[in-house]
Image 1: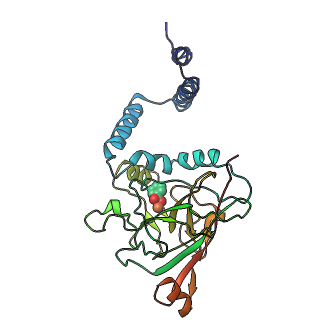
Image 2: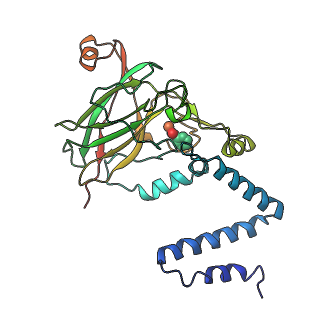
Image 3: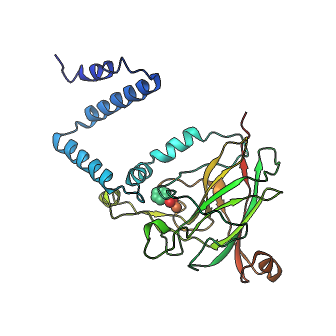
Length: 286
Ligand code: BEZ
Ligand code: FE
């Protein structure tokens, strides 16, 4: 007969015919930890029902352009933990951070130097650098997928009636020396979406929803491990209290005020402007 003492072992044993050993390992661990959690907190029936209701609402909030489950994983710190476990890189390689829920549409292919700010929403800036291998060798033909919120803190997919699709997004290919450069506006801090169950959770726990100003990147090149990362604007609010725990010191970059008419002309931007320069270092696949 099943009792609360035996149910955990019975539930784990029920997985004995699972063909995939990794699936069996994951589900066994999940059962054991969930059961331990319920025992430790003396979870009540009402609390269990509330949790089921919360998860149901989380699923029902997901659409083609909104991923409330990723958001939940993010605010619980799980996304960052998984990222860290799997982001072990050789010294010097660019550190990774969370993907976030807004990389849900393909970035439009753009020429180097293009402006991804299609609506002129903020302070103009240039982002430039190189994609290089761990030993410093430039990587021509590497891909740089970029996405960011507009000057008001919204992604294009959040405001389909306001922003043109592809605003704040671009897919760039590095030139012969591994260089990339593009124009955009300096991002600002913004709140993660709070009009769903995750927002309810933040309010119930007295947490703010803000992320420090950042631009997202996925850099990839043949023979190298791709990196999913951000750069954060040095001096931004919330660098010390990111709602999704994603800040790493190595990813904080200066967006330097620059007054240089000839450089501005070279980049096709009005002078003065802000300039963020950094290299993305990819680990060579062994
Ligand atoms: C983002 O930076 O796009 C993001 C990341 C995690 C949660 C919400 C938004
Ligand atoms: Fe973001």
